[in-house]
Image (cartoon, rainbow, N blue to C red; front, side, top):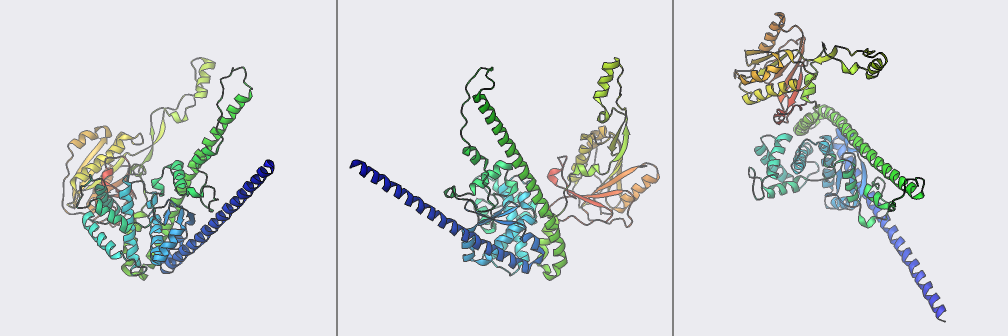
Length: 560
C-alpha cells in the first residue's frame, strides 16, 4: 500500500510539473507575441514619421531610410538612438511617445538623422564627451527648428530659441568649436562654481531641452568590440535571457560566450615522455580553442571598425547629396534653410593634415646618399661569403626624394590679422619642415610680409638656421589688405632668377582682400584660421586650408 501511495504522489508531481512547464511556455509565447506586436506598431509609427518628413523635405529621402530599425528591450536613455549604422528602437517607449504627441516622434527621428548627416556620432575630436554631446544636440535643434518653421511644432520650441539666443551671446557664434569651448569650460567648472554664469543647473536644463535620442551608443563613445559588446549586453533585458531575440540584435557577446563554454579541467603535471597522453591532448585542444576564440574576437573587432568607417563614409556621401539638393531646392524654403545650409557647408569640408598639405608642394630630387630601399642584403652577404670581401651588389649611392626647395610663404599683416597668430603660424610651418626627412635642409624659401604692399622679404637658405631667424622675426604692416602686391613681388623674383623652380606659394590671411585677376602659373593656397565657420571664397585657381588655433602647436591639423 505504501508503494501505491508513493507511485501516486510521483504521478501527481510529474503531472504538476508538466502543467507548470506548459503554463510557462504559454506565458512565454504570449510575451513574444506581445513584443512582436509592439515592434510592428513602433516600426509603423517611425515609418510614418519618415514619410511625413520626406513629403516636406524630399532632399532628405536618402538619409531618412539609411538606417534599419532594430528593436531592443531596454538600455536606451531615450526611445530611439543610433550608432551611425542602425536605428535602435525601444518599441513600448516609442508607442508611449506617439500617444503623448505624434509630432514629437517626428522631431525625434529628424533630430537623430541630422546627427548622422553632420557626422556627430563619428567625431572623436572633442575629448569632453558631455560637452560635445550637448553641443551636437544644440546645433541640431537649431538647424531643425530653422528648417521646420511652423511644421511639427514642439511646446518647448520657444524656450529652446531663447536658450539659443543666450548661447549665441555667450559663445560669440553658434559654431561647433566655440560652443564646445563654452560648454566644456562649464562642465569642467568645480562643483558649485559657474563659467560665465553657466553652472550645473543650467547645463541640466539645456540637456532636458535639447536632447532627443541616445548618444551612449555613438561610434565615438565606444572603443572597439569590447565597448560594443558591453553596450549590446546592456540593451538586452535580463528577463529575456532565454527568449530568442528579435532579428537584428547581436547575441554574440564575448562575455556570454566565455560563460557558455564548459569549464576547462586542470592539466596535471606529467612527464614529458608522455607526449601523446589524452590529458595533454585535451590541454592542446583547449589552447587551440582559446586561440581560435581570441582570433575570432579580433576579427570581430576589425570587422566592426570597418563597418564604422563605412558608415561614416556613407553618411558623408549622403550629406554632400543633401547639400547639393538643398541648394537646388533652397528657394522653396526661403531663409528657413539658412542654418542647415551653413552647418552642412562646414561639416562637408574635406579634412587633410597640414603636414600632408605641405607635401603636395614637393618635387622629385636626387640626393647623394645610400638608397637602403633598393639594397638587397641577400646578394650582398652571399658575395661576401663566396668571394671574401667582394659583395655582389653594392647599395646605390643616390636616392630619389620628394623635397620642397623653392617655396614662398606670404603673411598677411593687415590690421585684421592678429600678430601672435602670424608668428605661431610661421613657427608651426617651419616646425613641420624641420621635423621630417621629407623636407630638405637646403632650401630657397622667401617669407614675405604684406598688407596693402610688401613690407619685408626674408630669405631662408637653410632650415637649420630657422630658429635664429625666428628670434629676430618681427611682424610689420597692419594697413589694408591687398593680395596683388605680393604676387607681383614673387613674379619679379622669378624673372630675376631667384626662384627658378618655384614649388608653390601659401598665403596666410583672413581672406578679406583683393585677389589677382590673372591666375599664376604656380600652385597657390590660402590658409585661414579655422573658427568653425565656412571658409571665405577664393579664386578657382587657388586651394584653401583652415587650421585651428589650438593646433598651431602641433604638426598636424587642417581642412581644405
